Length: 383
Image (cartoon, rainbow, N blue to C red; front, top):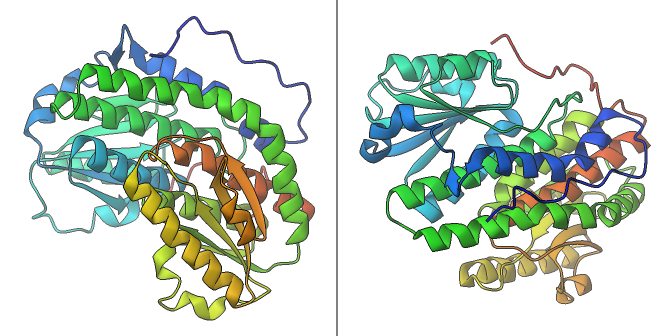
């Protein structure tokens, strides 16, 4: 279980040139706070979901509506909830939800995710859901935001103020709270025991320290990768299962702050058309982590290795995000950044951080303002 009396985060022995890099380094603290503030007396969320208590036992499925990075967190949350709680989950773009059929399932819970709580598309989606008679759960970083006030129930991420436009610590805090929600629902629906919940929480609580220890190495390796591929004009990001969400997020982070084209794809889709793009000028960033205790994770990893071999065989260049102890992958990928061992559904919280750092260094090397990218605002308040 999380230790509420754990020592505070160590002060970083450096100053930061901008808010984005500072906020990347603040992620261990933000994740700790998200866990600490949402677990009390071994109870996940305490009474936060009490307003929808009856719906928790009656709903037939969950719909997640979100935009941008928040939607990518929702894609990871979909697999967390389906795998842990056995719940059917659909993830919608907030901007599309209002135009979906009004004959959709009449008993869903609609989860809306937005860092600011003021995203216009997501507010509109929640209002539409409420008008259809659905219960809503707002996940937000701002307690007194519009979306939090109007929701049936609200979960706060407690990531702290995020000044830079690109989502970093708010994103990993969203992943954290969605993992907590998956555990909460799994326990409520009798899918796992309280002992299993405690084991999952112990694993989750270990991540901030692991990230803290790895950050300097990740930073240096990401900077080296960015220097090597500084002239590239496009990138592909690949991930399987829950890691597809992180491939999407890595691509978004790169394109929004460096203005190069980047696309996140399921790894197995590469050979269904996008492989036509593979050559020595298109770096491919591949999420190739594995949970050795999970046979499905190991199988996905093995299939990912075959894709890396395919890329290499066609003259492509690759950067792999892999698990510690994996020596085989270094013989296939051009560069490898390792993350600590973790269970399959917690690996996304680790592996997204090197991708944030890669995007940061690539953008700064190319003279971009990472805190205030062109044409972007922190919260899209008009539809």
